[in-house]
Every structure is written in structure tokens, then in C-alpha cells.
Image (tube, rainbow, N blue to C red):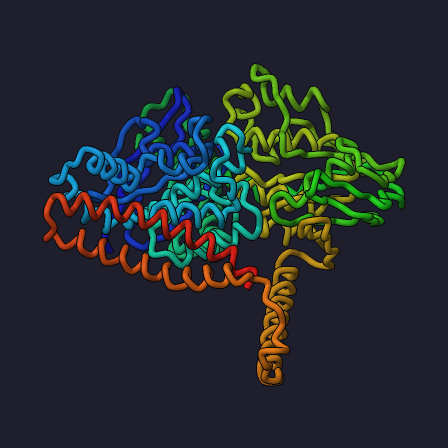
Length: 626
């Protein structure tokens, strides 16, 4: 296999904090690799180093010569005054640079440079760059290409950046949380696109179905060491557990030996100098091994929710819209005791607005939410919580409560609660400003859960959380003795914690589905398949059964005579223009044209592309009337 990327003995630290040390791995042609590690252990830093955005202490990062690389950062940025389409031509990639060089060469009539650039334009499919940009932006539901970057939400900006990476058709793509801010439909499109494409991938994502279906290798950073698993996420889970079981057995063995060695060390006279140095060294090595602890899987935390009565909430004739966008229309629902509901749907269908109406942050246009008197909400919002940067982690939680009630007279300290959510003692005494984005989200989650609510409302809780934290949260929610509503695009998470769904399908179309996301997806596919088969059968029946119409009983067409004639002309003109464009591109690549002809052909191709776009749009308008 051809090596695309080789990372050798990479070390990175921030002051006394060593993120990783002597890290080595490679990415070969066709490999699709997922990188897994806890928040704060350097996943994004590692990708930034590979992407050339950040320095490192020692080691090497080597790419194959002339490799086309695309990098999606976790928090991309563009000049605010650019339009969406202009941003696609501002990226630092080979195709955009080539297009800029080509336009400059045409402007300056530099025939020598044009002769050099034209074969590269063909190789990189640069002629169709703008069309590819529009297609991929459309798949990611970015339709207003003239909208200014400064007017986009964070999610829209991430999708523009993702489109920018995919447009260039890279050979190696580096992705940092590509599914953040994608709705379920977009995630499944991207999943299929990357799984099918002949492209090498190195990515960080918390979406476990995405990892399972796209990746063929998993790399895990654990205790500053790198472990490699040649398989998808399911295979990784199995082999990781085998590794941990073996490590725990090794630790137990070391503990048994340590007890014997400790007894020997204690029996020696203090002043005696005849101890074998090798045995003393072995003692300290054993002690080091015996102290190894594998975190995160052994604690079963069941926090006692406060009492909740039979009445939870009732939605009564709730209607809400923003202009032409309808969120709910005469919506009624009675929420049951201990119900665990998931809310799913595409972006912009009103999921977060529904939650905000329930929480009293947004008022319905009509109707109301009647909430029971015993309900105590714990609300985790997408906006997060603003922390005092100079506070320590432990101080943030002890300001809420020193102890958390587990019920039955049992309590745990705030520090123990933080430990369960993977804040080690040293992390608990870190200042807020030292935390990664994922660690801040995890701390915010702790502040919500520890207030002893009996009704949790979680709006996109999985964004920026690592897989280890997600496992802890899922276990917590399964054991939670209260009510739950979760809004999330994380299919794996929803499958594990909810027992039924509200599916927001847009324009106040809301379906109550009795099951998890996987069951809903299977049901939806069955419905779509049945609808397609029924439509095909109806068309076939109409074709065979329809009587031959005469001119007198033919139904009236919507197109006028002039429009019909224009439509027929476009049917002939568009293929003709496309054929001319293809012929000119072939001649440009032949190397047989004179300098003047090169310039003339290049200018004509630009004109043809504009004409084809214009005529195609008009053809689409007329085809809807035909």
C-alpha cells in the first residue's frame, strides 16, 4: 500500500502537561481511520499538528509528495464579509490556487503559463469546481450562496467548511468532528459519501455509528500510549475489552508479587547494604505497575431523583410559527411518568424551539404547557454555561452542592461525582481556562445533573463529548429514576437511552413513534419503499389502461405556445453547448493549439459554462410547467 502520511515519534506538551509522547502511526492509500481518546488528551491538537496549524516538541510528520490533503478544523473561520460561494474560492487548496493562476494567465494573455496549467486543470477537474461546490453545499442544506459568512450560525459555518473540504476531491481528508451540526439526513448522506469514496481518512468523531460504518481502523490514545485496532468500531470495542482484561490481570499479578516483595523489603535491616540493587529496582517497577488503574467502567452511579408526581406536563393546543415556518400546529401531548423521549428531525424543524417553549423561554402563539407542581427540571441547553475562567473545577461544583444525594441515606462528595465523570483529582483543581471545549461541556453537564432534578431536558448533550464520557452519560441516563427528553443527532446515543421518539418532519408535521431511532429508520425505509412501489404500479397501470387520446380531448397544457417552443429549443441547445465545451476541453489538453487559440478556447469555455448554467435553470423552470 502507498503511504500517504507518516507520523514518527511525535511529542507535544504544554508546560508540564504532556499530551502525548513518541506517538507513531501512518495512513496508507484507501485507509479510513478513526481516532478515539478522552477529551483533553490532545485529539484536536494532534490533528492541528498534522494539518500544519500547530507546532510540536519533537518528531516528524511526513506527507507523500504532491498529495492532495483536505482538513476540516473543529472551529473553522473565514472573513466575515465573504459570501458563501466566495468562501469556497478562498480556501487554501491546490484547486483554488490553480484556478487563480489560470484566471491570471488568461487576463495577462500568458500563453506559456496557460500551456502548463491546462493539463493540471483537467487532472484536478477544476473546470467543474463551482458546480461541485453548489451540489455539495446543497446536500449540506446551504442554499443561499450569496449570504455573508458573518451572518451564518456556527453550525452553518461548519457545514460550509466541510463542503470546502469535499469539493477539492482530496486524496487524504482529515476531519475533526465532521458530524457536529449535521442533522440525521446530512449525517447519513456524508456517511454514505465517505464510505463509498476512494479516499483516505483520518478523523475524530464521537458518532459511533458513523465510525462503525465508515472506518476500517481505529486508533486509541489511552494513558499517553497509542493502540491500533484493524477493524471498525464494533471490532475495536471487542479487542479493547480484551486488552483491558489482560492489563487488569497483569496489574493483579503485579499486586500479588508486590505484597511478597514489600514483605521482603520490610524484613531487611535498615542499615544493611547488601540488598541486590536489581531486586530493589524490580520492587519499584512492580509498585509502578500495581498502581495502574483503568478508569471509567467500574462505578455504578445511581443518583436518587427527587420525588415526581403523576402529572408531568400536558401540551394543550400548542401552536407556534415564525413567519412562514410552522413549528407546531394545535399540538397536544400528555407526558407520562418516567417517560424517556427522544426528539429528532432535520435542522430548522423546530426541535430546540419546542424545548424552549416547554422550559418557558419562548411563548407559544396559542395554547400552553401545563407543568406539574412536583417537576424539577434539569436543563442542558445548546448555548452552554458561561464559567468564571479564574475558578477551579472543584469550586464550580461545590458552589452548587458539597454532597450529592444517592438516596437510601447515601451521599457522595462533589469530588467523587466529578471523578465519575472522568475529572481526575488533578483536573478538579485546574482553572476553567485550562479546560478543552469537551471538558467544559462535561463540567456543564455535571452542574445540571448534580442539582437532583427529576426531569432532565438535554438539548444536543453529545456535541463535543468524547466516547468515554458518552458511555458514562448513557449509563447514568439508563439508571436515572425520573423523566427525560433528549434532542440529539447522535443515533447511537438515542438508541441506548430513549424508548420512543417525537420526529419533527418540518412545517408542524410531528410524528410520535413508539421505538428508538434504528427502529424508526427501518420503519421509514419500509414506508418509502412501499410508496415507491405503489407509485410505480400506479404509473404502469395508467400507461397500460389509458385510452388513446385524440387531439380534441387532449388536456390543455400549462405551457404557452411560445414557452413550448422555447422548451424545445433548450432541449436541443443544452446538449449542443455541452458537446462544444467537451470538444474545446479536449483540444485544450491536446498540446497542439497555438498560443492565441489557447486563450480563445479558455475564454469560450468560461462563456459556455455561464450559458449552460443559465439555460439549465430556465429549462428546469419550464419543465415544471410541461
